[in-house]
Figure 1 (spheres, helix red, strand yellow):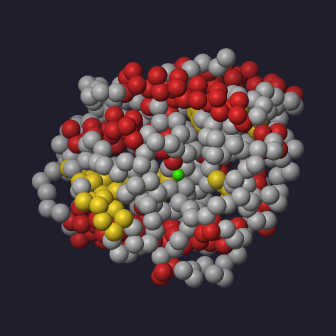
Figure 2 (figure 1 turned 180 degrees about the vertical axis):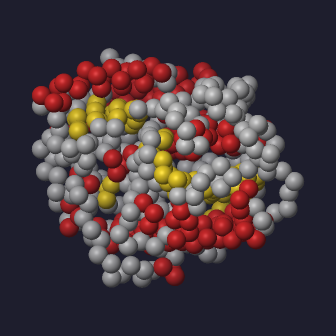
Length: 492
Ligand SMILES: [Ca+2]
């Protein structure tokens, strides 16, 4: 099937999603529910003081690009401190590996097929209507600030629920950016990550009588990658290792073998040159791009250090939950791809760290599946705000308490086709501890099934193998169950 037909169908999918989404989500915030429904106190009985929240989001950082998540040479001591003194969620995933849909899922706790932000196009109007956790915390008495990249629409005007708003249009610029700050738009001198960190630190240091929520969403580490001047030559001598699946011959991936004029595909693996790039900073050998992304990350780590310092100097550190996560992973030549969007592990898997010593023991490792849709329920729960009844995610507080609890054993992920990226069609995937089934919903005969226990790098498609055929009915049923449970459109 050609991409034109896929696009028409994808638009239909998006329209259905939008129709579903607007019913429960539009309009005024919902009435609060009572609790997570799993016997966990909603916070009001647990904490004498409601914690402050510093939520730090980075863009396009794959899960293993930090010191604390196993990178061989990168130095991220400040980000690592969050994990060392808090929790590292070692199986964290996004429900859609794409910027805008994932951000809306983080903010609402809902799937893209329900909140309606299914693509990276202009979702400005819809994003004004989302019932977000900052909005709920603001209504419950939190002082709130948004600092950074909203990435849902070109409109940089304040979204509901924020007392302070510092943002910019679309992706912004790394050097001397134009920012909109409490209604005033102007160019500022400096490096974007540092500019945002300065605003974040000033908000932390402000005197106040209420708890606060700081939502700090960096432009970093999105391409094209322009490091801060001080990091320009960092890691110059380090060897960039090839990813394990860079030599995938794509024999079991007919989707990736189609001739659709890919824009972001690295033919020949990391040693090759990516084709079809439009912007000069994204040109060059793959190793240089990876190195430059790590250099861009370094300013984020500096910024996390500045946040720690501000919290310590104002004696708020242990009264503050710090969260660090990415909106999606990133494929650095995995299966010959450079991008996110695909259903493979490095695209859907993210780093997720939390520090809050009043609740989380230092060095906690969480191995259950935790998703981007769990962020909003968790932060509501911790702040003593009841979790909205229509959230699909769940508070992770039971996992952090370390007590046996019922938790999801599988999850659904999804992606809706975007015409500028024709290589990846619309898909829906279900993953459990061992298996992943990827259904390309607009294409016949191209589905994929992987045994992640035997084949963690997703090299061997078992969709037609006896072992795969034995698992397929169960995985299809699980996918449909999860879709129904989250008010999705059942498959044809
Ligand atoms: Ca992203």
